Image (cartoon, rainbow, N blue to C red; front, side):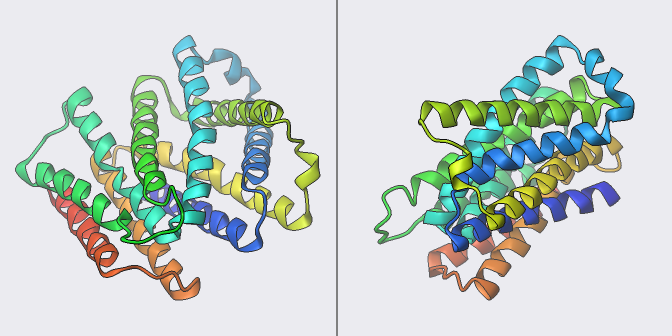
Length: 285
């Protein structure tokens, strides 16, 4: 339970960092690249007494780390753009309702029990996604598309995390694996920067630097603590996915409304409430 609580705290911090990036009008991609450098360096420092374990990562772990590292950069770019266009609340709902995908993956791949309630919960989650991202009038072209992409992408990432946790990871190599993922993310981000012919250094400021440090610390913690929670076995993985996402969902949406004055339409509020119902049904099922 302790690792799950730390994972939830890290997840909330990640979303709030992106809101802070939007408020200060910082260069989101520069923050993303810097965050992965911080996450890698922090992970490297923490495992310096266990550097031998990096050489013991299997080929499967290496390939999975490569795919996850690339996906992390892509999804963070989408998350940052979605928070800016659709808002923190809607983006968080889309990201966290994606729990339906790793739950379905766990049921199919690892034969976790599927009840009628859990099936209904997954169906309601899809309906909630539509309601929460629907906006009748929005001048921003991709305000609807970005949360949908966020939903699909985060679901794939969480399913891959579940796969690597079951197939490869033990307590001693979770941190080395996490550090490797973030090194690949940083390297991928730098390649994207070069392709876009942009320099990292031209966007640096104290606010951006501090935000990158906070985001990188939270990012490493989110992956590490979530894998440890899955590995603990104190609850089925479907329940851990649900509790993690539900907690982050409630707290970040309420933070957006109360402290950042984000406004949700009646349909968005209906989607928010339905998302809570769907996650509750999944949890009870």
